[in-house]
Image 1 (cartoon, rainbow, N blue to C red):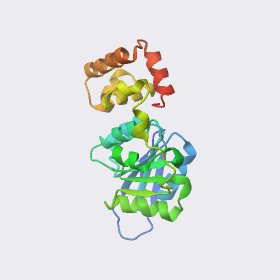
Image 2 (cartoon, helix red, strand yellow):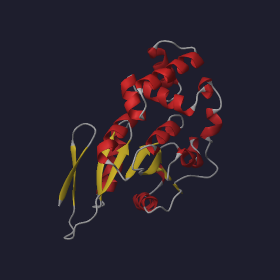
Image 3 (cartoon, rainbow, N blue to C red):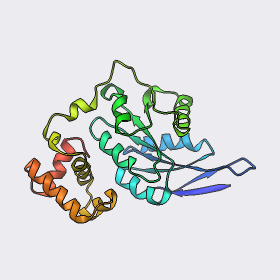
Image 4 (cartoon, helix red, strand yellow):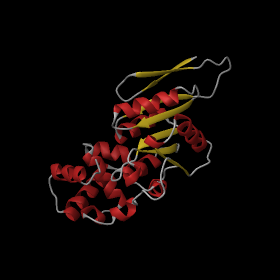
Length: 231
């Protein structure tokens, strides 16, 4: 049995089951800017015939695809600066999928910050074997979280402490989400659709951002989001 799932650039990923008995297909979504990471993680999951895998290069694409794909599992890039906002946006997907944070620089991230933002499991992908990676994913899908793999307990710096400083510290969580999506290049309508808000509410959040940060042009907000690591 072959099953094709859409991915963000229109390609199809086919997952073929060799079993004679039909199996329940689990939809997984891999979200990462780096193609090589998306391809590698997708290949690992696709080797398990119970997974149909799609991928997205941005959180906006992931949220858009989730409206039709309804993934049971989302694996996503969790960076020191934009990880919390990305995770909080993914938590809002309905039905709520199992969220696995993928970390490429474990020395800069404390796994508890990933879990506090809503992740069910955290994996330092450079420090785990293939079998360990798949085991954590399977355990997270079974509801055994929170799970952490590949981290050294003494080598992390908590993100929450870092968020308390700098110009972005005056923003509410929702305002940080709007700024994150502005940095992704989304219009007011696209932000409203992504966050399930009205356009007028988004405009109000943008006005608050401009007032609090003393930045008027949209380009200025985009530059700040990029400098602050939100995009």
